[in-house]
Image 1 (tube, one colour):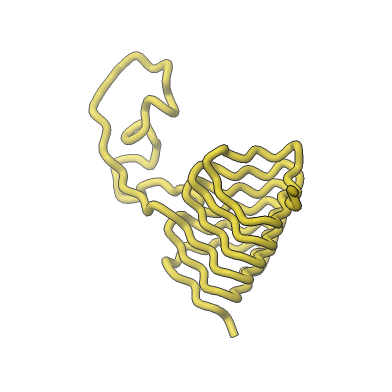
Image 2 (cartoon, rainbow, N blue to C red):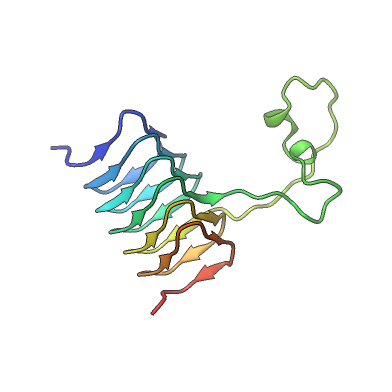
Length: 148
């Protein structure tokens, strides 16, 4: 028996894992190698980027970005032409060597976390159990402990 609800408009990668029951509404996107714990609710417009791990009993508001990638800020340019030319500019004929841009592998959201609408949790951040992230926040610290 399938006791989870995943909207027909949602885009869910085949490689994700999840525990029943979950709820994914509207046009939410869950990208490759992500996982979602039971009783978690993900609202419309939210994107879980590759490798994002969400615990159990989480509430994620509208239009959030979890595990969002960033750009290098200490290079010649922040443009992906330096490190991801083929993906972003596939029709550009000139080929030159690319620089490896190392990014953290995963973003971890603990259990019973409430993330308000329009929040951005950058790639590599760990949010502890029971944390509350107010709507419209940018969380770029590497670890956010539970708030008391």
